[in-house]
Length: 149
Image (cartoon, rainbow, N blue to C red; front, top):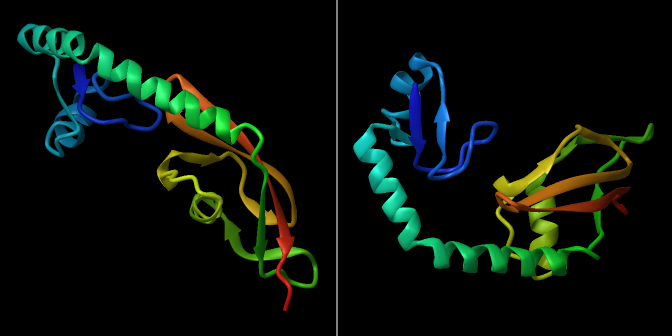
């Protein structure tokens, strides 16, 4: 079943993409929740016209994302967290802590755009990916250290 996405969905596609999904997923989840519409010929024509009109706006959004990516290139984060005597973290470090650290540095990055591939449960060096646009992403190295008592 072909659908047009109304918002970005991880591991499926981005807003205004035409994707093929299984009928049950489309009819029972995506369409009722307003995340997608059926890709009928009329809907495809409307999408093409809408994209044509928004082309220059999308270009500006992409340039803004590239500018933020250029600023984020040299950024390295240090996250202090509570650690046991064996070096394991109480809980884990995730996108929320990284978003807070970036906010302290002056970057307004949504935590949903930060992807940490491996579970961060020990002190050490890691990398996170920030997806600013569907064509623009930046890798940010971060270090998890023990919090001073």
